[in-house]
Amino acid sequence: MPLRVVFMGTPDFSVPTLRAVVDAGHDVVAVYSQPPRPAGRRGLELTPSPVQREAERLGIPVRTPTSLRSADEQQRFCDLEADVAVVVAYGLLLPSAILEGTRLGCYNGHASLLPRWRGAAPIQRAIMAGDTETGVMIMKMDVGLDTGPVALTQTVAIGPEMTAGALHDELMHVGAALMVEALSRLDRGELPLSPQPDEGALYAAKISKAETRIDWQRPASDVHNHIRGLSPFPGAWCEVELAGKIERLKILRSKLATGQGIAGESLDDQLTVACADGAVRLVEVQRAGGKPVSAEEFLRGAKLEAGMRLL
Image (cartoon, rainbow, N blue to C red):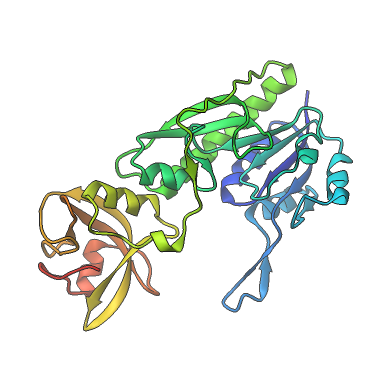
């Protein structure tokens, strides 16, 4: 039978799960999302989150509290008398009163193979670390950070040139289907729960601006993983001299290549760059204020020859 659901999510990643839960026939009585944020060139317009926009399209009431810590806000949640809360990339901590405020608990769709990559940036961190697989886990939430018992798991391979953007898009659909399966089993009283092991736990810290610059002094495999793990956002970058000016160049895609040289040195006229060990070939780049272009298109308008340095 349909469950009475509160959905809690914010970014694009969460939207397919909201749609899937609704399409499965469950009664989504309210959607919680982070408040609208300033947007536009001057930051004067408040833009609702992707989840809020989708909920409004579906005719579901939306709540956007800045915190769930107040007794009044917690009571409002409990007054919904929901069977379960579905949480996907919501972005706010859930106090105990919220975790215990539904009949069956709060279930989170998390984009990693827990306990590896608990935290805010599991997709980027998995690629940056060179992981060859990741996945989605449906977890019953507790007061810890992604520490609750796991109900369902689906593994996804990470290809050698897969970017964070491509992996994000695959995982969000895998997660949507897996959450619907979890709700079906939960409704039948057949959803298993297994405690997470302590061994192998890693924290996926939010990506900081300070770590987005490419360090050519690292091995080529690390540089390649860094580039694809930050693509398309926020984007790994370096600086290069073009037409007598130092420009920031965002690197969106790369390939491992053969070659040796001084770290950061262009080895040819095809954007092959030396690293501490080996080299990478830049495949897709973006100049400041420009659009993403292929290496070939970039080189038609910029002179970057062998021997030049990328900083």
